[in-house]
Amino acid sequence: MFVDRIQIELQAGKGGDGCTSMRREKFVPRGGPDGGDGGDGASIILEARLGVNSLAALANRQFYRAKNGGPGEGSKRYGRGAKDQVLYVPPGTTVIDAAGGFVIRDLKRPGDSFVVARGGRGGRGNAHFKTANDRAPRHCEPGSAGEVRLVILELKSIADVGLVGMPNAGKSTLLSRISSARPEIADYPFTTKHPNLGIVDLGEKSFVLADIPGLIEGASEGLGLGHEFLRHVERAGLLVHLVEPAPTDETDPIENYQAIRAELAQYDASLAEREEIIVVTKSELPGAEDVRAALHHLTGNDVYLISAVVGRGLTELVAEIAGRVEKRREAMIAAGEEVTLLRETDVRPIETDRPKRLPPHLAGPTSGLSDGLQAKDIDL
Image (tube, rainbow, N blue to C red; front, side):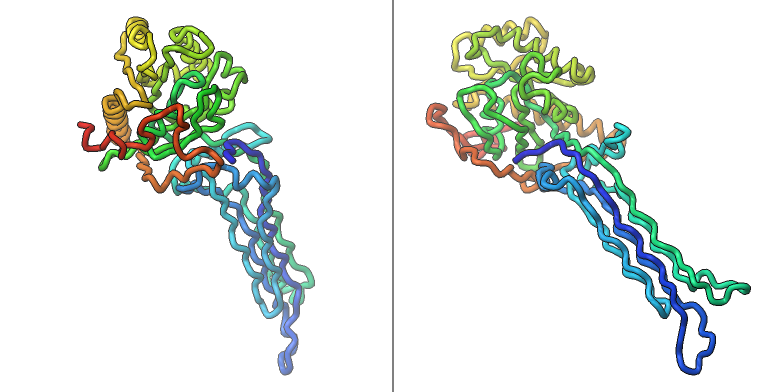
C-alpha cells in the first residue's frame, strides 16, 4: 500500500519524578536527604532514511507515545533515562504542524533528522533542596511532561525527472523499459494508482524517474487522481511530458498537452517554468508524426517520437534526459547545494499484486536497459 499523506499525534515521554528520601544508616546520625533525580523522558525523532518509500508503516497508528523516564531513588540514585524513539520516513517528507498549518521541517535528504517532540526533564530529588535553614527537606520535584504535537507528514517524491501526461499516455510502459521498475501496465486509463520510482542506471551515471498517475483537466481542483499526486513533481528538476497521438477517448492530443500544462501552472506557477522535454509516444500509431510536427510548431522546442513497446527512440531520449540532469546537478553543486545520488538498492519496490511483465497484447522486450538498450549505447 502506498501512503503519501498521514496525520499522527506524537507524545514524548514524561520525565521521571524526583525522590524524597533520607539517609538512614547505623553510625550515621542525621544522614540528611539523599533522594535522586528522575530520568529524562524519551523524545520522538523523525529521520529520513533510504529504502523507505512510503508512509504506510506509520499509517497504522494514529498515536505514538514515547516511554517515560524512571523515577529517582534513595542513596542519590538517578532514574533511568528513556531511549529516544526514532520514526523513519522517506526522503522528501515535509512535516507540517496540523494546528498552525506551518511547515516544521522539510526532510529532503537521506539522513536528515530532527526532534519533533522533546521528552520531559526528570524532576530533582530532595537532595537538591537542602539549605542551611532546611537540612531535611521533605519535598522533591515532579518530572515535566513531554511535548505533544499533532503533525501531518506529506511525502513529495525525490526524483530528478517527473513523467507527466494524460491517463494511458504510456508513462508506466516507458518507466518499465528504461529502468528496473515494474509498474502495473494495462490498456485502460488510470492503471497507475500511485507514483512509481525507478532508477535509470547508465553505468557511472544514473537518475531517478518518477511515474505520476495520469492527470486530467481539473486535476488541480481535485478531479481525477492527479490532485493527490501533483505534489510528487514539485521536486523534479525536469519534466518529461508524454503525449498520446491517438487517445482512446478521441480527444485532441494538442489540447490535451495544453490542458496538462495549464493544470501544472494552476497547481504551482513554478511548474509551468520548469524545464520540459516533450515526447510523443506510441509512434507506431497513425498520425504520430503529424502530432509531433504540431507540437514543435506550437512550442518551438524539439519533440521526441518514441515507441516504448518496440524500443524506438528510447536511446536518444534517455541520452537527452541524462544530459540535462547532469547539467542541473553541476549547477546545483556550483551553487553550493547538496546533490544526493540514489542507487538501485535505495528504491525499494512497493509490495503490490502488480504483474511482473507486460501483458501479452503489449508484446516486445519488457525489461530495462539490459534488453536491447545498453548503457554503452548511450553517448553522454
